[in-house]
Length: 312
Image (cartoon, rainbow, N blue to C red; front, side, top):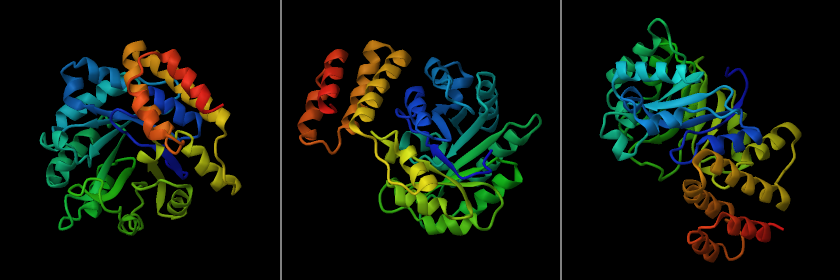
């Protein structure tokens, strides 16, 4: 599955829904991971958690991310996800957000490796569940645990490990320490995927050129830029700089709105669409004033007229 250098859309709450995954896949994303889904929510029948499982037609394979702290709950949730169409399960062991950490999930597992082992052991138990894990380098600068988690993931037959090379404590501040990740990746045969601070094609190309990495995962660099995947691939495959022209940008933005309407319905989709529009117009003269206008708009046809005017 990870035999080639893969470019992957990261699991991002409120971003990596079916609509955005479909757009990114259309521009060359090799994989697109779902939004983070609560394992407990699935097991206890939470409707919103179940909705997040639904695959898009482009989700081949369908890679679902779960978070939780209890091995048997996670195993049961993984089985539910597989029955709902998932092909691969990712376990979040790196999310630093407080509401996740306080439950013992996400980055809290970096401070409790025995709990992480319990989860991996449960997933590796017959019948084994195909899974990956996503981590950070440690809880803080005094607790580097990446090597330990790679060893554990290898022992319990994870398919791959993704690392965002920051500590949990610094959240998204500072700079991702990719050299630390490269050093760890060079010591293992487990497929290692890197994530963090990939905002331009040169950085993406540089990271993908490292033999020890099996791929990169794009997160915030895709905001308002689902075509980032094609930008990278044009540079890698054809050594060309590529940017979408105005027509393609307009078509993509309008298509995004249509996808969201299909997924969420007219009213709810508009709230989500306006957030994406604020990113799409970045760099356009008068963008700040336009953002204020966008967040007051309640008519989807008026929004489409505005997009057609901006990108004509």
